[in-house]
Length: 223
Image (cartoon, rainbow, N blue to C red; front, top):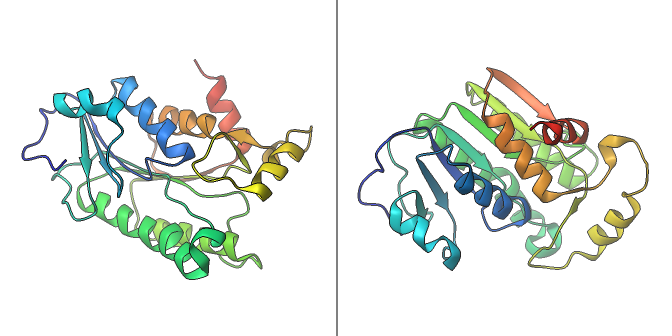
């Protein structure tokens, strides 16, 4: 659904991409239920879930395609885009996890966003020997170079939760990473990452921050 007018501004607005994945779907639910945002713009290839029909009808939630334009004013940008090399190949993974993320961040900043909050990964490093970690690290570098007022990079380890596609290797790793290992490599539910992202957005400070599993745990201890 493409909005023909903006919702009346009684509070900040949010822009979310990657709303149909493990973290993104949980984050969308929290954004809608928090009543923190006067309008939430979601950009996705798939149709909006039926359970949000009343939110769309009220104007609180606007479901856009990638051909639509954002409104002139966005306050907070959230990104949970991601794929796997198995699904998309190396070229597709870089296209989604780096290029589309950076393009979406640029679009949000062009609409005035003060916060850029992006799901990255533990071990993100532009010089990593591992392709996935290297792509995440390059994405972080590219976004940081955009010089937003505030940038949050979330670096969880293996994620727990129901996904649309089964990932055997990730499921096996999740079982192993439930054991009492160093905290920053422990598996955590995607819902906890989503919760931490929203809590961090309530009090935005200038600068670039990288949040690891221990930070995600600390946010989730807050009331």
